[in-house]
Length: 116
Image (cartoon, rainbow, N blue to C red; front, top):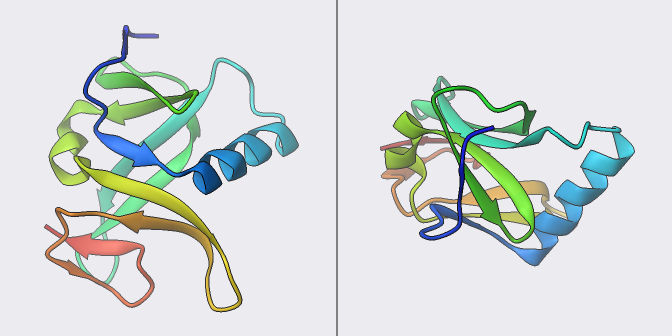
């Protein structure tokens, strides 16, 4: 795994998101050497969709420690994700991870895709 960057964190995780991510990791028996991968990929109704899941570190990753969770991000994705907040919603209308991205020029109705 690459060096863990402890200074400028590109994203924030709310307390609700951290709790849910820890629950998922425990319930799915995700190995300890896996970290949370955050990224983007082409597609979705607005141009890009968010990626969120547990994965092993790769050569082109930056590694961060955010709220006690090791986070992996491809260096090329930082321009799309810088300043983003990931939250967990648990309401009657919405349940799931919410991506509050200041770089998004447009978002779709479902909140999982955006254009930059």
